[in-house]
Amino acid sequence: MASSNVGIPSGRGSGVVQYGAPVLAEVARPFDLPAEREAAEHTTTMLFASMERIGQVHPFAKGMGLAAPQISIGRAAAAVQPPGRDTPAIVLPNPRITDRSEEDDEHYEGCLSFFDVRAARTPGRGRSAPAAPSGPGTRSSVSLPTGTPRSAIVVM
Image (tube, rainbow, N blue to C red; front, side, top):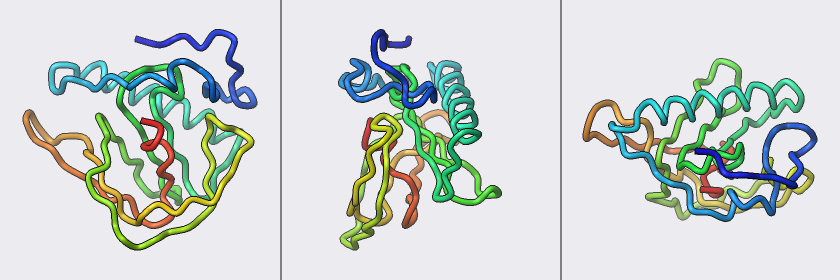
């Protein structure tokens, strides 16, 4: 179910809703997995299609992250593409931060929903969030390494 972003321009034609869009202010609805597996897979497909389209126009050498609300889908899902063409993407259904390192990792990071804004961020290294479950009733987590885009998870 997509939320409306009528009247809110997308960042430079990227299809990403911008700050002020109601969908970005709403709490993203989590998936009831495994019952909503098809909906989660569809959302993931939409995230990757958007990331592919954005990557053709705006190459992000340090990687890219995108959350479902940023493409007008009010569901709790995010995808992170770490740097490097051969590095597999990380899919995060129902992401939440479960741990934070005490070490600092200061770097400049942008958000596609604040298209022309970049700021120094000092998030802790190695944040963890639930990743795609390997089977019914299972959970797994992923640590996001230094320099990996984390803004998509913060949007959630």
